[in-house]
Length: 270
Ligand SMILES: Cc1cc2nc3c(=O)[nH]c(=O)nc-3n(C[C@H](O)[C@H](O)[C@H](O)COP(=O)(O)OP(=O)(O)OC[C@H]3O[C@@H](n4cnc5c(N)ncnc54)[C@H](O)[C@@H]3O)c2cc1C
Image 1 (cartoon, protein in one colour):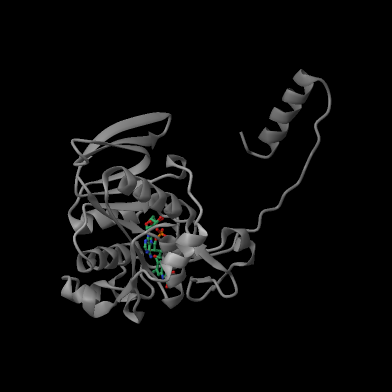
Image 2 (spheres, rainbow, N blue to C red):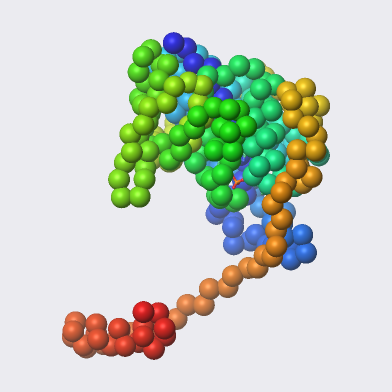
């Protein structure tokens, strides 16, 4: 069965430049100025999985992001790798959203973008890093969800996904019927690179834009979007400064182990 797949991708500050990131002590927000934006790495793996499913079962791959106008770039990159079309959810009404408001807008954006059988997400972003969006998005859509997916197999002509989930100390195998939201981990696959042909073709593909009114048409009240729709409040924020010190402990293995235990006790670390 051909699947209509939608992949949620998020633009994040380049983790290579995280050391240049600062926090605003008043608003509690991250100052991203001057840090190059990139696609959240695990979302590239979600896209790769979608392309593999399309190759195996047929169908289409739509990529969607909620973000500022410059988030269009991560959609263009996804189109160059092989996605069929992009959707940019962009509106000042979405600014300041916590994970609940983000998920609500993503769900409304998905509903207004068309009919889908499967939504793939990354399991966690590298900046917000809550891992809450996939579950909240599934809830908003009224669909089942599977997180921490490291392998997906298709049975019953693509109507049921057999998923291996990474759990602490093992693997959990579950089956889920479509439509569903599946959040993947990086281990699921190796991402392909865009080809020259792919980059040239990307320019011909559509990136649709949707805003507050489109989400309202899809049934989401404006009050549920952005900062106003966010029950989370940042109570405080601080930048941690790690102090590192090296102490060499000499002697044979037994003496060194005893000295190490004594030192850790002294430091109240045992
Ligand atoms: C009060 C408050 C205000 C905030 N204000 C801002 C703000 O002004 N600007 C800002 O950038 N952040 C803001 N944030 C952070 C923002 O809430 C999170 O970045 C966002 O909700 C996603 O959460 P996450 O990164 O933890 O996603 P996770 O749950 O870790 O992400 C998992 C997956 O969900 C998908 N996903 C997540 N976000 C998006 C997205 N935007 N588009 C498409 N797919 C997505 C991706 O597939 C991703 O891999 C604010 C947070 C709070 C609490």
